[in-house]
Image (cartoon, rainbow, N blue to C red; front, side, top):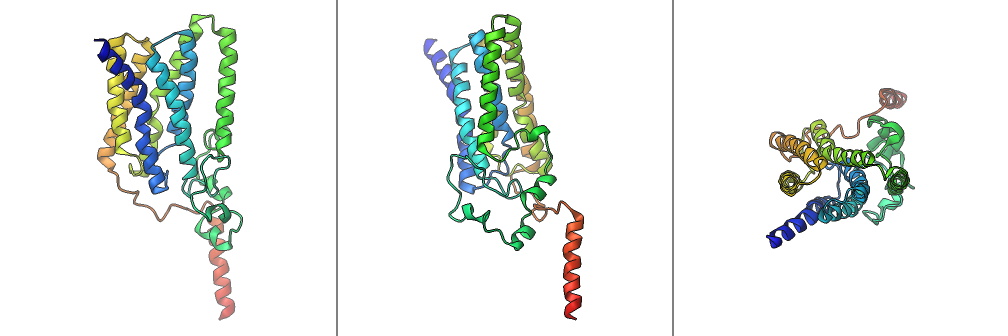
Length: 288
């Protein structure tokens, strides 16, 4: 029985971080991260940082703590990859402070030698950004990798201060656990929304979806058998329900690229497009 428990603990600690290895490999291979919502990285990073502080007040099993630490590391790497391989519709510039080198030799110079034709084929950041839904303070939509690190560092500092002040009270520890695991239970929601908007699961690996579904099913059974805190049990069931919704999308939409590729860079200002046409008409008239 001890061997089975040890293997189960190893699977719990290592399984979740390994799910995203194939997703990262796929993004690097295609040089395109458009199909994968990097909000997933944000949810996992925030939830697991809070979960580590939850462990300081409620010492749950070591494999779950190791899982949180490995997920933090893996999501930092995956986030850097996602920012590096953003499509032009998401960002016209390479994210600064990213630990990865430029995707190609001339990618670092495109931003410095932009021609007039580039603005027609690809709108500048101020134009394309307006077509994208904005959040307060552009939360988790920043361009630079350093901005994400600064936010996470501030979160760790704030949680550390709160741990010193309120860590002696059990109500705060319990609330911390519910917050961490409730955030984690929303993990599939950004991917669900992304798939729904694009009417496609292109770019989202089947291995990642399978890892979500079977991994969360395994975690749910594991939490009930091991008698883990109630926070783990409730949120595991919630996450499994959302996994099922994303699985249904995979069956409905398939993995083909989105159909409307011609509207990847829509004009954010109709007057500008009319202005381009009017200029062309004036030039044609002057020639005649």
